[in-house]
Amino acid sequence: MKRIVLAFILAMLFLPIFSQDNIVPGELLVMFKANQDVDVILGEINNADPEASLSVIKPISERINIWHLAFNDNAISKETAINLFAIRKDVEIVQFNHNNVTMRDTLCPNDTRFNEQWNFYNDGVNGSGGTADISACDAWSLTTGGTSALGDRIVVAVIDGGFDVSHNDINFFNNAIEASGSAGVDDDGNGYIDDVTGWDAGGNDGSLPSAQHGTHVSGTVGAIGNNNLGVTGVNWGVDVLPVATNGGAGFESTVLAAYGYVLEMRAQYDLTAGANGAFVVSTNSSFGIDNADPASYPMWCAFYDSLGAYGIISAGATANNLVDIDAVGDVPTACPSDFLISVTNTTQMDGLAFAGYGLTTIDMGAPGTDILSTNPSNNYGQSSGTSMATPHVAGTIGLMWSAACSDMVNDYKANPSGLALTVRNYLLNDGLDQIAALSPTGSNPTVTGGRLNLYKSVVAMSQYSSCPSLGIEKEEQGSILLFPNPASGVVNVEFKDILQGSYSIELYNIIGECLDIQTQYLVNDGGFQLNYEGYSSGQYIVKVKSVRNGTHRTFKLVMN
Image 1 (cartoon, helix red, strand yellow):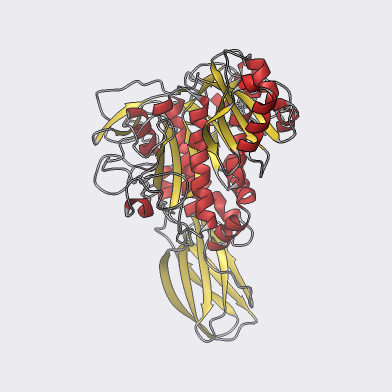
Image 2: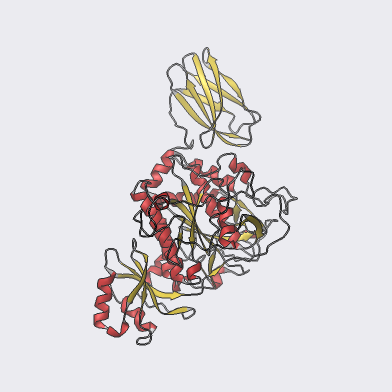
């Protein structure tokens, strides 16, 4: 776990925080306590100190009461302005706005396009060392993503400068209510007008600018797979929710407004049982501020907890600089939230690229060097940097939820923050390959010492206790033994104290797709053999069911 303690930041919330670099003159970001009226509070302060001339620039998130405010910096100092709020009991957080947010890309386009993506399938000759991929093909044999067990369209939000939302190889989110409604009208009542395909938090409208960076990142999350076109993403069918920041490039307030839009979309989905909004499970942020102290950006850091309350895990790209983030700081990747996964960049040889590390701040690595993905105008190209690593992780969260059983999804909807942390822990504890370059005892340590393994991350979802068979019901009746387990093709089924009769034996993969059905007749106590040779290694479900009365027993089987 990261050792920067959130309680420390919370203890500092009512003290003036002065980050002197890149402060926007005459602007504040303020989080008021729940149910407090911003207009009433500003009226009280302006009456007591008319020179302050406080006014609202725009809401960042009305749901959690964050506002972007202006004050007259010709009349009062920035220290005076911030203290007008720091002393009030109806204020949670007050801070300056900053304008030093930069994209986390180190673009190294290569005119020679690989025919295969080494980060997903690494055969040792496609620009890689043969072992540094994320085992994607194994994962895709279990699930290709897109829909939960209850039919929810899974959404990953990408916050970036801009997007080519017309790209033929990406499923960008479509807000059907706004698309079928009237122009200039907030048809779905979410507070955002004409957000048909996401939102431009900088321009404060639904017209998203096109840009290479966000298009490339989106393709890694969810370029359409198995469609005989271009490349594939971590998910083959997930919806990518684009949230642009280009209209307010570099401003912290724009970043927070972008997160506010994502939060509202998930909140709307939950409040309307899926009729409005979007089932957002993760966000990707491939931008940040080098060498920044999280204590100067308390609202940004706290926003990950706010998103986490709605079940959203965020992935953040660390600095493209070979530095110890523990020592030099970074935003967002040194933020302490448990709902944030901080990611560094690994290479084709499973080394650490020219990127940040940190024993208490950087959670893990993912491939981010010479990554082939989507570019604007239906093109493709390579890019490198932590920007390219992080969407592998955001996309993995989406793929993991597509493998969750219906009980787990129901529990997630009832307890979104708790189950989001469960998935985060599955990923960080069981979804990684340990590599020397990131070892906690090495020269460039990370929290886990691991690089993403997509297959292990998906399989880790089978640990959930209420439905270990991931979507196949479990009923304990009779006494049946299945062995050996793990198996190498041939599996024995042994019965005790069970009446003779016919039994149906069904084989399922981990997401509930039936692969084989056979019928065996049992005369007395005893058993029979099942031949599953030819099936790939991984986890399966075997259901042994009585044809006579329908009673059955479910087993989790591992194939070597």
